[in-house]
Image 1 (cartoon, rainbow, N blue to C red):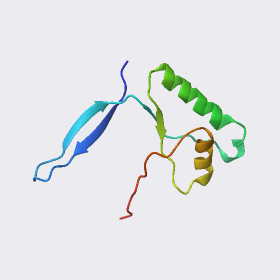
Image 2 (image 1 turned 90 degrees about the vertical axis):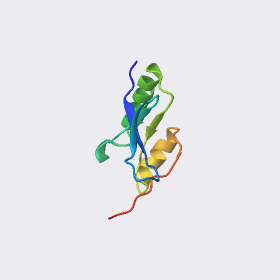
Image 3 (image 1 turned 180 degrees about the horizontal axis):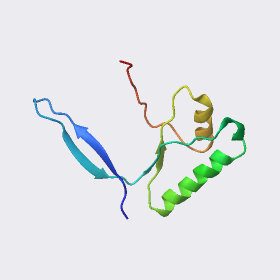
Image 4 (image 1 turned 180 degrees about the vertical axis):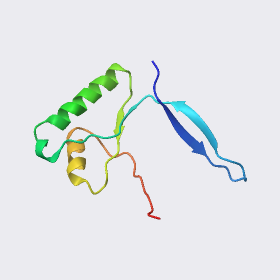
Amino acid sequence: MWHYPAVFSIAQEQNTPPFNCLIPRNYGYIFDLIVSQDARSQGIGQRLLVGMKKWAQENNYSHLELTVLSHNVEAIRFYEREGYNEINKLMAITL
């Protein structure tokens, strides 16, 4: 089964361009999970996550990942209730 590739770059100390490489992924990534405000607390998000987890298991993915904004406390609590754990922090600077 084909899994969508991930792209990464390696920068070297010399004045050479970064090296780009495609690697296969064995995990799924949830880009967006949006439930409208008036439809929340009805189990819709939970059912969507269950469906995505089932699909990922059927396709031999090792795990699912997602990104949630740090100020979105409601979503963080939801994902934690569903068994998701923080594994790293993404940091940014505004330019």
